Image (cartoon, rainbow, N blue to C red; front, side):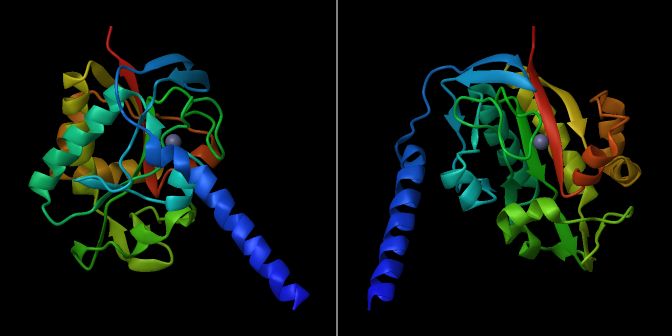
Length: 241
Ligand SMILES: [Zn+2]
């Protein structure tokens, strides 16, 4: 009996902990301008905006990351950029469910598993996928585990080779991000994406435009950084001077 009581007490304490951790996201209001200071690897943010967990045109990828780790904050200019670019993408891909991965903590600064993302100007975007030429949301729903997915040099998911990266959709998204960024006083500073997948990305119709656009893709990455940027593409924005 005592054991059961203790179990319930632990469960109650955990639920209470989850409630208090997530309250910040429920009461947050986006208003005013964000101030991003310092560098992406040593910076901070004031008056951050919070992504919608379930936006009109996109969804955040993990409740754990959103409500418990508080990792879905960003600069207001990037927030608007994402909204506008996903609106354009939804026009081109009406039934596609786009997913945003981690952005930044409410006040910026260091966060788990990322060396950068400290000023609210960096975003991880989940690669769009297709399976047998059809949209394939199955692997988009595994939350934080998505960061552990590996793709082969042709962009096929190692554990499910019929699922592959939709390079055309991804290239188009980066182009719409640049277009929307400019409307918000930003531009893309750098894209980080696994080096051996870039040729497939640039081969597509939108990929060719992307290559000509001058948007900078990181060229030489440390092996560990290169290895983990296949399930998502990381984009740093900068405020235009
Ligand atoms: Zn990142």
